[in-house]
Amino acid sequence: MSRRQTVTVALTGASGLPYGLRLIETLLAAGIRVWVLYSQAAQIVAKQEMELTLPSRPAEMKAWLLQRYPAAPELLEVYGREEWFAPAASGSNPPDAMVVCPCSMGTLAAIRHGMSDNLIERAADVCIKEQRKLVLVPRETPLSAIHLENMLELARLGVVILPPSPGFYTHPKSVDDMVDFVVSRVLDQLGVEQTLTPRWGE
Image (cartoon, rainbow, N blue to C red; front, side, top):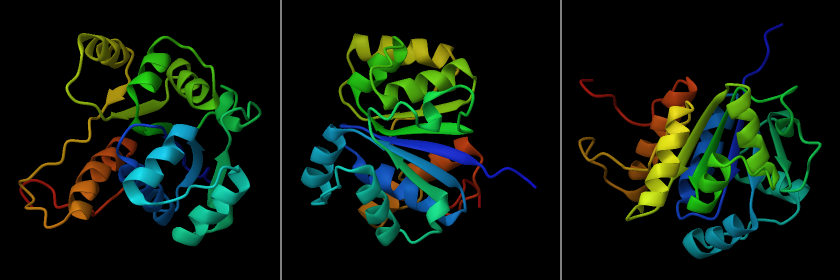
């Protein structure tokens, strides 16, 4: 029996919650098992950017996500920031990949320095040490030298730095099209088949 692919998706307090939620939606639709981690700051951003109230309790968040993005319940788990017994907290049971989307500069800096003060940081640290795919989607502009140095050091460790920079050669007609462009690039990094945006030359 083949093992189901598992991806951890972490939502942090950077602008760009539509990217993260769309990523969760597309992964579930593809039959990928998803472990969701989210910060309190992400809840604040979701309210401000999307007028969404993300539940504070993981079980309620799971029910909310499944209502919004119908999928088999066994495909989705949600963990709190201090849930140290979550699978993603240990190298003995890491996911196949992790995406921090959106990724705040504070989270990026903490990952770069191996802080592991909460489950998001620890899960990313596990991916690095276990040499699993880690994709960070940082949303900030302009970037300071500190930001750039942190990104460079992570890139040297094999972390994928994927800024949410929509392309316009696809002639997007809506904000959703621009979100899909970025999410499609994330899915490509995960090796997940996607048809969200046309490929160059097709």
